[in-house]
Image (cartoon, rainbow, N blue to C red; front, side, top):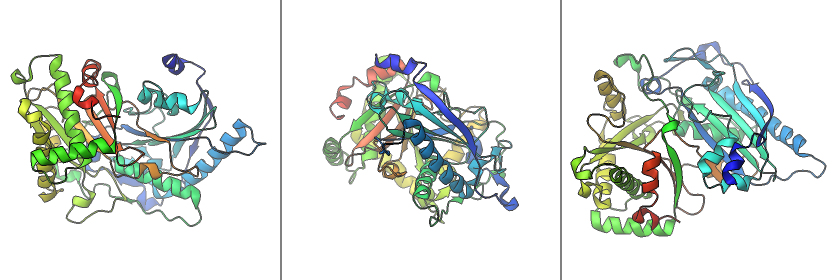
Length: 447
């Protein structure tokens, strides 16, 4: 019954689609936004994020359709004003290295979801169900028919709940950039006359493309057809106990939530992959890549309001059973972070070095099943980011959703809405996921 809901042709009704331009023109001096070397590495992947709010109070005399149009108007007006400061997202890609900030605008849709919000949030396949609040097939897509670099949608459910979703081009900014945009948009809707936004678009001023061979075609593309996503909640009480145990056994002082959770996910994923092939002892090593936000790691520190793909990576490998024991993994992860903080993140940026070396070999970075590694897993940690503080006027969201994607063997870690638990989104191949979610060590820790 639950799965039939998602395939129903009457589930989503599009009420309106329009294009929102910045409320004032972008100056000619800002017409062309130059993309950095890391920006060019990414395809035009659309980073998706959705915010679900319980029933929105409405006036008795207002019908559902009127209330949706009123909410849409408020969102469109504030979006138009926000785009003045976030002008590259209102432009269009001229080529892999340049955004033409021509004020083409963002696409904005208003839709009705013909079910209760709880049917989506409590769906057995919640990540897939949450995709209904996005334009069809857009989350993590490598391109979009209209070419708009920002696509937003407001969805109203039969119960009166509201979802706001955004998809922003990865060519312009990373996950931190997306959260900066959404927080600023929500601030604008509260106090349009007094809110001053100050995002800093760094372009290629930090990671200049002039030092390296040009990237003719993007190297990082999404492929959602190969993965299935599951959500795992790690409550604070169980995490605190695991952190204390790992600290005692590893010698790592105060291991973080992200260190112990990501280590556990990597361990369980390797075990799941091994169970469907040969013994781990006879296989090539697996690699674990952690993405880093380097804004605070630069010699000249950048503010968190800096917009761009301001990223690096560090990695660890596992060859045998000892390598995937949690104390060993956490110790290696901590060492990787400490080494990264000592590096010049411009001249010794591991993400750039990985891209350059892979292109020299004629390969794509972090590619799975290559000659060197059996599997490559990656992790993005956005714990401590204020995604549950995004308030468009209806309080804090019930859930912040991230749909299925962008490819297999990816972990996303974010704060759980209650306490200091961790909400982990895991993307794996289907046959590996079936083994992964039955892992006894994992089952003991999730709620």
